[in-house]
Amino acid sequence: MAATWGNNTWGANSWASETVAVTLTGLPSTSSLGTAVAYPEQGWGSDYWGVENWGESGLTVPLTGLSSTSTLGTPTTTQLTVASLTGISLAAS
Image 1 (cartoon, rainbow, N blue to C red):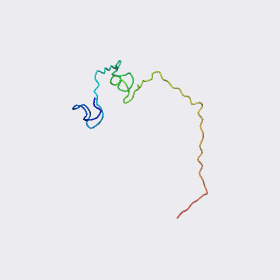
Image 2: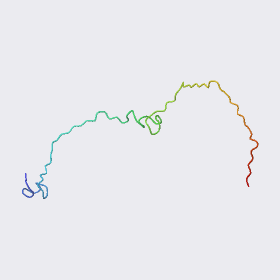
Image 3: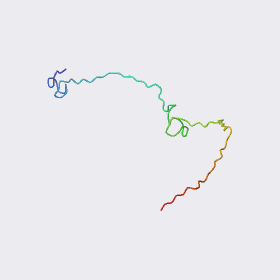
């Protein structure tokens, strides 16, 4: 193997450098993904058309059997008296 450029046969080293370029062969590699899930069970767009709310992961569930009760107690009235003022005058010119 060449130590510098131009000291060995044609193409034995990188051009004008002392870097030795070596190509590695026979390196095996194994990888596995497991089970690929195309549509996970959570998130908007993961269900069928029209199943979830638009643009969000959530369902609007109508409530049935919902009731509400309110009471007022004893209503009371107040009499309002309108009094007219007399004896006061105002003039402007």
